[in-house]
Image (cartoon, rainbow, N blue to C red):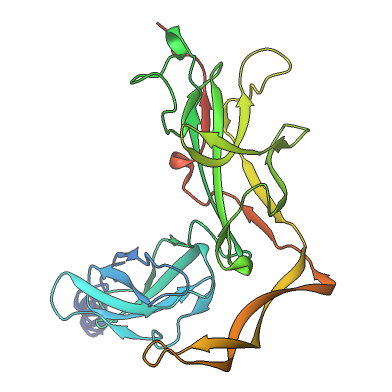
Amino acid sequence: MRKLISGIVVSALALVGGAVIGSAPASAATTPTLVLSGGNAVFGLDPVNIVATASTAGTVKFSAAGAVVAGCEAVATTAAAPFVAKCLWLPKASGATALTATLTPTDAVGFTSVDAVPFTAKVGAPVQGVISPINIFVDTVLASGSTGALAPRFGVGCTVSSEYIIGQTIVFRVYANNSDLGGAVMDSSNTAKAFIEVAGVATPIQLAYGNHSGVAFWTGILKTGTDAALYSTLGLINFKVTMVAKDTTTARVLANKRAIVKDPVTGQSSYQYVSYYRTKALLNPIVGAVGTWKSNFTAASQLTLYAVPKA
């Protein structure tokens, strides 16, 4: 009886041991990598590719600004490394847009699904903007007369630049055309107001139109320095240019009239109707257009004021 019990115990232990030895633990699935790039689009133009690069094959779901991109719900990666999936994306707005993606691996046992680190794409917008019939162009130059550490690096002045040292005088050069007036140059004869608003400066800078060494354009002056009356804020100089056209009180109207016309071949004269333009006063003047300009360039290219460099 004792031998029988011993045999049963040994058999039971053998079964338990066999169960333990025979069931090796399953290996944990690997978390793959997924990296986003691309998306360098210009708003209003053709779609561009968002590129997802994974460490294993699978399908990728692309999203922009929190919404799944149409047609990119499950884009297959390439079969061989690098495992790349591309999504053709048409941005709905300009500016910074958060792009995300999720990878579902083909080998669902060996790999887990993974989300890419959000990638910010900066969708471009035309730097000049499309605001009104008035098209404005702006640049800044260094006023002549600076000496010492404030002197221009090359030449004597009028250097086009976006970087200035405190103590220098910045000259805004502005030139514009008005499509309401057939693309006419905006000058003092057809402009009611022209000024620049600078952040931190209470009074707008009034623009003046005049002749500068044989060429005419609008100018405005911003003097910088450490005195209380001067502009002294270091860093980006945020400004906006505004131009207002004069109201239109007359219009050129195409008309015809009866006139004597001489035939160049026969030399004989006859009455004919010929066309001409006449000026007509408007009962209700056309309000002048308003145009504004503000830089859309990246911070590295915008107007900036620096401290005087140390010797």
